[in-house]
Image 1 (cartoon, helix red, strand yellow):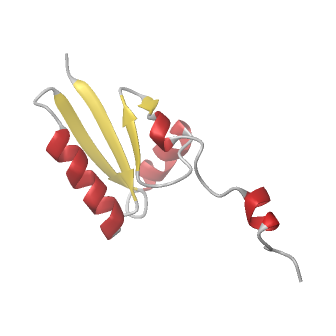
Image 2 (cartoon, helix red, strand yellow):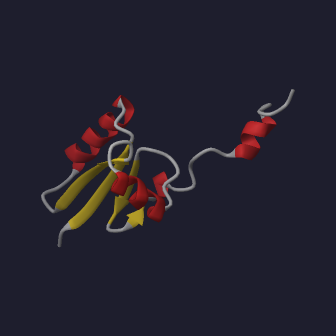
Length: 86
């Protein structure tokens, strides 16, 4: 059974390093696909469908990995740190 691994990146060095780690760990049954949301319109749309809020993010067999979910900017935390306060 093939395993579909989708890695969403911004094409930055930090993302590139993580992509390489994933590729190094992948087995012969893993089909690793990398999507750069900065260069590919379809990749951005697909990342939104999965609910990706931060990059890099990994989707395995159509499921956003727990380590990649519920991330992104938390405006309440930023406000508590002074964002928007004079």
